[in-house]
Image 1 (cartoon, rainbow, N blue to C red):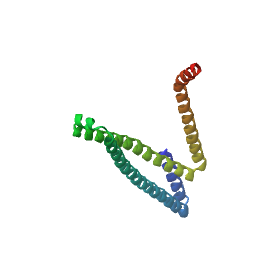
Image 2: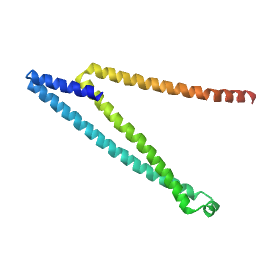
Image 3: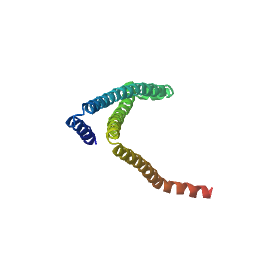
Image 4: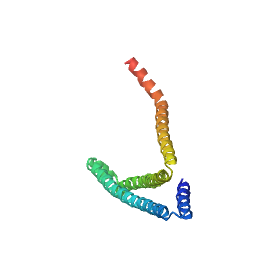
Length: 169
């Protein structure tokens, strides 16, 4: 998708230069520079937001885990090595951090690339941009319907068992 955008923008730029239309070429060059700048700013702001949220979430998980120790009986602390409890807490936070890193960074970088690519396509060829946006909306809608349908199929036996149980009560 990015190659299509690059070819379109570069193609229009070369056409403008060949036709001797220097104002159109300069305009395309400025627009391309603005799009690159906006994409870089979006990446930086997103990176900062992801790191900020992750840091505060990890602090909250640590606090929650240690607050749960307050309500445990004394016997648990007598039977369990303190280093083991701290290790378990650290593994919990590390596991969450690994999951968060994988999910967030993959989703964030791909979403910025897709959005900036579609914006560039829409700017250069609005009908291609409209087709891409329509396709993405249809894809998301079908995915949601599919997921709901699969969950309904997997939950149907459970719902039938609950209905049968309620009939006997």
